[in-house]
Length: 243
Ligand SMILES: [Zn+2]
Image (tube, rainbow, N blue to C red):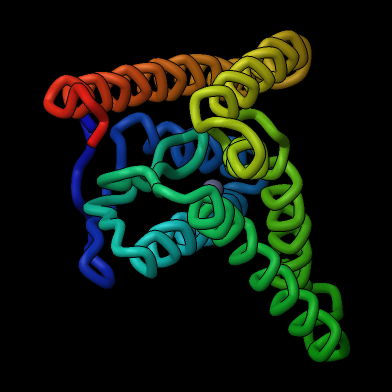
């Protein structure tokens, strides 16, 4: 991805950061500073840091699930709207796609459970007038639940959309499943755009990302179908009597 830089490498996967991502800590750091000076800025920055660590772990969930099926992920890039794990190929079987798609949100479910356990077990310790840590952990728990719900919206190529395609592909052809999932994703993307226009501009960016992503994936599925038909045609010509 252009304008992205490697910041770390874990389990053989490069973690990259897109320059636009830096707008996020800058913006929230500034908001925190305006509200409560240096402490406010540090609180906001630590929360954004923890949030994107959760996003990163989500992407590692996809990447490691892909590795289970021999699909390599050279890198994960952090963007202001979330993370993107770039896999070298798409899973062949619908069951593989289903497993890989669910693995990301499953990581956030696990994080939410751990956070809930920490908050419950340390209730007395973290309570008190200076309970910023408790508030942040609570907010992080809420955000992780939000990430699970948002990612499971069937807006292909988001995780929920991939689950939808995988389920459809168990019954219909890969192309038909992709077509239905992509069009569903694009309708939802239009909803995101309208909602984002009134509520949150970030949602408009996500809408664009989903709409274009769905179109590209559909185009890829069409090309794949044409390629497979060509191979079949060539095989038939080589063997005109079907022996
Ligand atoms: Zn995901």
